[in-house]
Amino acid sequence: MSSPGPHRVPWASLGAIVLLLGAIAVLQGRIDAQTADFATEKEELLLSSPGAIQKLSLGYDALVADIYWTRAVQYYGSQVEKRSQDFHLLWPLLDVTTTLDPKFIVAYRFGAIFLSEPSAGANRTDLAVKLVKKGIAANPDNWHLDGDLGFLYYWRMKDYPDAANAYLEGSKKPGAPLWMKLMAARVAQMGGSIETSEMIWSELYNSTQDPNVRKKAAQELEALKAQDDEQHLDEVAADYHKRFGRYPASAEELRAAGMLPGIPVDPEGYSYVFGPDGKSALNPNSPIVIPGPPELPGASK
Image (cartoon, rainbow, N blue to C red):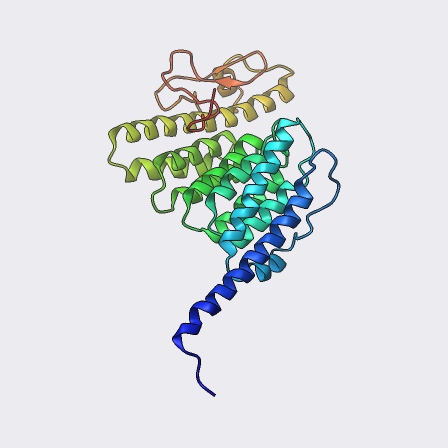
């Protein structure tokens, strides 16, 4: 028996290509059958198992992933155009896409938008978080995905501790911009984690050579100290109300009642004031400003 010659190799390759094209045709036909009539479809994906699809792809996972991503975009666009509230095929399409090609960053990032949009999407932030976390696990050095996760927690879910943690983790990755760490500090402060926010701002102040960043960090640290003072004074004022049936008009009354060792002042040396509800606040003459909710880079106002 003669051994196979080199001239037979192209025929073997051609045979594999024919099989591949046939498999893709089968896949395309099945996907088309499932997504042809978006108005009345009730069925689930015939091939919702990434493992089964990988076997049919004959090693061309990225190529088949492109097909599924295209169909996911088409599906999403069709549902939005119809103003449909039914996006039940969106997650399976995205899950298959990113399983076949774990490095498909666009699918994670835009897929999360499709899933999380409340009025022009699936309104499934939980699945968007799941998708982005899947992307982070497969692409641990991509800070963009951590930023997307922080956005979902902060903007969509109002989960400030998890949002701050996502931004902080992303800020540690290669090429991450400074705003990631700034967002982590501000969101932590907004969520009431003064200690975490103070830690991040202190690190920024001590590590940066940028005078503008150092100035910003110093201002934020002063604001955090004032915020911490106000929380303590509010607690003391509440105790004063329990004892005397009214709220204190000033810190002097708290000192006179033996509830404060002295008159507290903010980091700029101004004494705090009290409102009728017993809540403390910065002196109107103080230059310290306690910031409001942070603006996301690129977010519309």
